[in-house]
Each structure stands twice: as C-alpha cells, then as structure tokens.
Amino acid sequence: MSQPSTTAPRQLTEADVLHVAHLAQLDPTPQQITQYRAQLGSILAYVDRLGTLDLTNVEPMSTPLEAALDLAAPQAADAPTPPLPHAALLAMAPAISHEHYLRVPKVIGDGGAA
Image 1 (cartoon, one colour):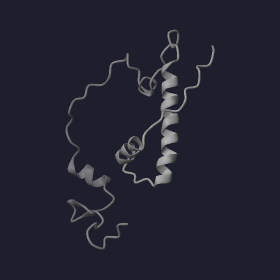
Image 2: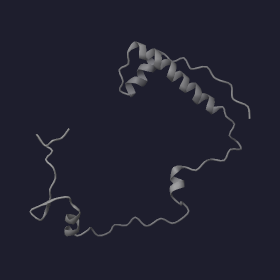
Image 3: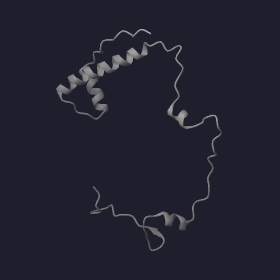
C-alpha cells in the first residue's frame, strides 16, 4: 500500500487562530499566534491526508462500548425499585447526627475548603 502524498499545512489567518483561541478561552501572545498558526495548519493538513485513504476493504473496528457490552444479549430492564430503608442508608453514612441525619463537613465560611 503506497503512502498518500504529504499535504502542505493549511494557511490559517490570524483571525482563524484568534477564533479558535477564543473558543478555548485562551489569550495568546503574538508569538503564540504565529506558533499556533503553524501547528493548527499541520493538524488540519493531516486530517485532510487521512480523508484521502482508501478504506474500501478495511473492516470497521469495534467501539469501546461494543467491547464492554454484549449488545446482542438482552439487557436488564430499567425499572424502578423500592428505596432502601432509612436505617440502611444511615448505616452507610460516615457519620450521623441525632440518630436521623447525615453529618457533613462545614462548607460555608471557614469550613476548611481549599
């Protein structure tokens, strides 16, 4: 199988780079804009190159979902079930207060949050 010809990087404008930077919430310096123009152009050229590949005899690969699940097997019904008893839920809690409530760390003021 022969290699596809190498496509020259696309010539992006400064406005193109600034638009992508805005979408990524970046504020690039003029030097970074020049660097990003070259990098993004190379990436787009590579994507164009991938689009020229002849894949007519290539069998599609499985997806991670197909690898993890047997999609041909029936799945369990997604039906509601009764909630756990209050005592069972409290038994799973790291701490309780007044025998009925979950105790959680303070998060307002000086609660030790980072």
